[in-house]
Image (cartoon, rainbow, N blue to C red; front, side):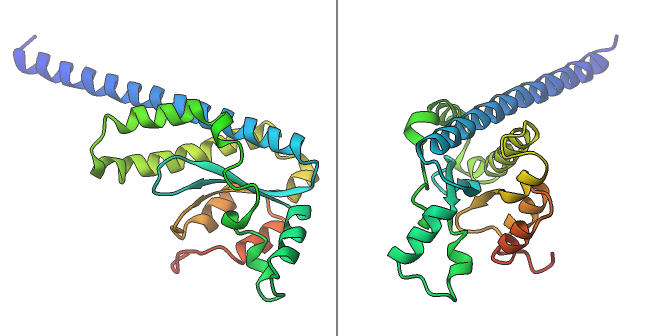
Length: 203
């Protein structure tokens, strides 16, 4: 085999090995995020015996995702306590930041995911971290929710239509609308949520 051919084979092998390592690392991240979300929501449901209609992964410039959720009971109580007007109720119902359950269970259930994210960040420049890695993390969160949904974690059949799940970014990236469509079955509740989603004008 000529030296040029050997060099090309070696380059292809290294490229394929690198790709496989990336896939393994991404799979490990998805599994950690899936477990963290599942454990946090399971604990939330057990601690608060309420009717939950919204669960989300939230991602901001802290680069470490956390959960938020709303139940009908928490929403109604919050509306009264914060004197929310009729005009504002529609968006307040879905505002992750004002939920009493925002960041629930982070210290208890996100340690493994947090360690993985810090480990990944340590290998990247700031430009890589806030570009390619940012989108990889958003994708991993969406994939984690998809897998939980397939398992029946958010309900099966008609009961699934009583819950909306999503991955949201702060500040909004105008992609929440499209992610919600990918992650949820069509329902009246989803339509209600989509009404307050920021979306790309071209969508």
